[in-house]
Image (tube, rainbow, N blue to C red; front, side):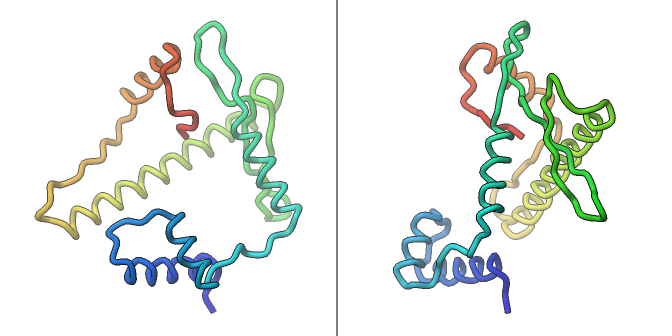
Length: 165
């Protein structure tokens, strides 16, 4: 039997085929699926639900570097293994962690970003292969200019992007 995510994807394919849309708004899909009683929230443990909400709040916490004018995450996360089980730990950027935890956190964050970039490159390669007659897509992997632009926009107070990575 398919797991919940696989069931949602199969249902999305059915909805997409039925509606013949080339792209879709999840809200429209949810309306369609719930009206047919084909989609419901998966059962959740209250502790897991609270954990998700707490970790989301910790990831969103920001502080201002008053000298440079940019914001940074107030809490950092690091995955540690306890009895071969991965456990996320959080620490305060300014007052917490150890040198080893801070280094591990930065390394894990970079690995996660590299994974996202790799996935994006594969997606672009696939779209270019499937649609060779369309203008070919580019994915520039050097983010130096993006970081500089976002830093300037944030310092100028015009940054709309509250969650870059």
